[in-house]
Image (cartoon, rainbow, N blue to C red; front, top):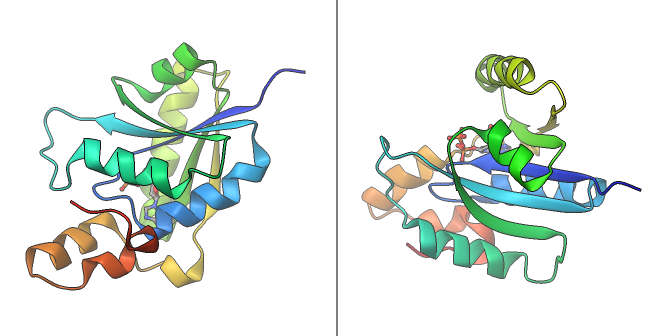
Length: 154
Ligand code: ADP
């Protein structure tokens, strides 16, 4: 049987407990799940991508299905390169829905063979975004509270 391979793409600047929750809930659905850090040269990061990727790899060290990877370019091209049939995204609210449905529609145009699947946020993390965590970090707030197991350092 063909392996079910999914990509969970994002900026993950940083990777939060909300992202962790989506990954843990997506893992049982697939044979492999790539947590894919999209490189965007136009967008400067606050949290170092290499350190973040190492932290996320440690968080999922006991989950052989979870892989951490960086990619450039279009997500659907990356999916084709690694043989993934699914894109997983999280949905928190109507704003996410608006943006995500447009992205999913464009990806469907570009790559009809790839299905985007959405997982609704755990209400516990519905208010949580990477941008809020960045603000907390800049103002010396307890940003680690919102990172997986206080794992992800800058
Ligand atoms: P991007 O820059 O591609 O939007 P993000 O790293 O901000 O990347 O988010 C990646 C995915 O995770 C998106 O689908 C986003 O909606 C989802 N996400 C972000 N925060 C949460 C959260 N707290 N709960 C559920 N999903 C989330």
